[in-house]
Image 1 (cartoon, rainbow, N blue to C red):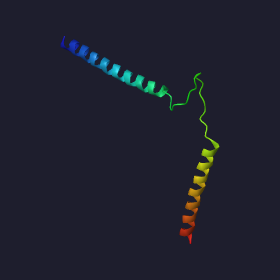
Image 2: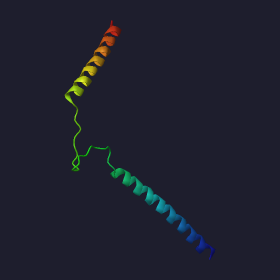
Image 3: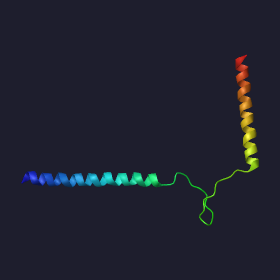
Image 4: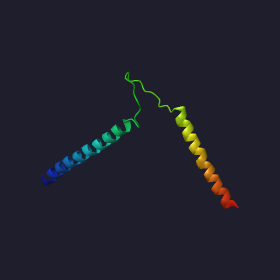
Amino acid sequence: MDILVALNQEQAKLQQQLKGIQGAIAALNGAHDAPRRAQPVSNKGVHRKRTMSAAGRAKISKLTKKRWAKFRAEKAKKGK
């Protein structure tokens, strides 16, 4: 009879572990289904692509060119 009681206790313990594992799997699956990043939504619920103004693009382009010019100048100084 002791063996039967021990087996029943072990079964209960394993069932609790199984529930925990299933919960962890469900949590991982739920996190996987979540959107990766927020996108702006209009009032109608249609997703809109984010756009950058021409002035913003020009500013970034100007700064990038300046950064690369500085890099090339330093590289030329080291090369001499």
